[in-house]
Length: 280
Image (cartoon, rainbow, N blue to C red; front, side):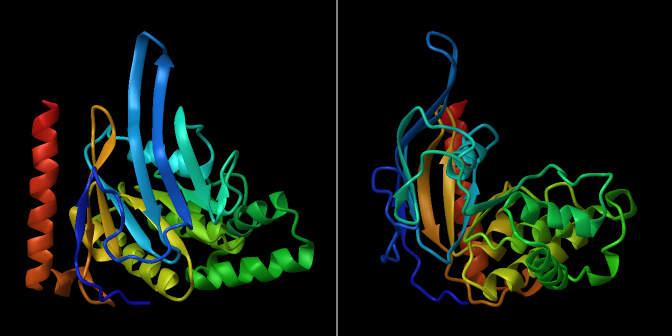
């Protein structure tokens, strides 16, 4: 999968994709989320967010801590109900848990008493797959992340990077059409992070998955994304969107020598810095 479109941008006042096309796969319309009791310790986590994401796209959310990136991911996953607005997934309004989405967080959610194989199989058991189908899907998932030889190990016997690969395999096993990822590689060292980024891109390119990925790292966003969405806090809102017209396949070492990378990076940094100053 490649993206060669012309870079286009919008601001919060006109939140539609510059590339055109069907945006109905995943859509938020005027979504607001408030935490706390009304009039007492109330926090506006999101304010009137509208965003459409086309099927098969890789979209990164960036912005300061507390700007609502993870909150919107939770809304898309159906784990958090918005205070106002509507959310649509694959043509239908989302009214509960989004069973068509896989969710990988920054936290390690593997069961320590289960092997790699059993951790992956658990997601399939929950969804009611039979024994033969579970076995076949676990095999494909292990192969997709290069962990065929580690199936009998326990999480405590794996490196941090390998545990992240198991989490991805567990998600891929039930083949969700949407994968939500909340800073999954933030705690890893730079080399491991880059290897997992490359593997994720290979996995995404081989299928028709739509990925929404939260990160604080502009290098990571520019490496991965078709499109980057910038959030600002107080209250959480979208202030900027941009297409990433850097050629694929990408690797970070060569990407940094591309003049377009530097231009995009600086533009995003300036906009994030501007929104941060507004919040002070």
